Length: 110
View 1 (cartoon, rainbow, N blue to C red):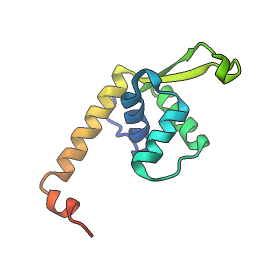
View 2: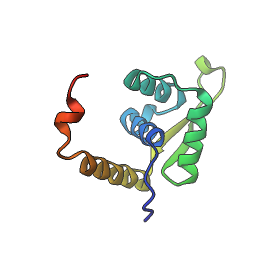
View 3: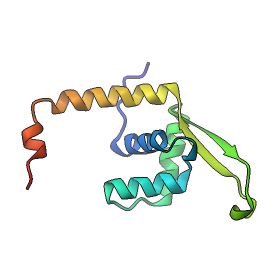
């Protein structure tokens, strides 16, 4: 088991694939991240991150049948792997441990 921590954007992308379930392909992943984080996400950054997560074994991709609305282009769907879920759990535990006792400071309005 790897002890490498996920980078922030990797964690966000992996969480988006988990939330979207069977509908996790690039466009909804990108929209979800932009909606939740209020930051623009370039297609290139998203695809590079998805490729990196796949090469690390943290997500897997499959192709869905192409529909007429996509002009015959298949959808590349992404889903977290068992290793990806464990990486999210590990990352979540670390963040929770690091922020424990800091709730008042972190949740204070500026």
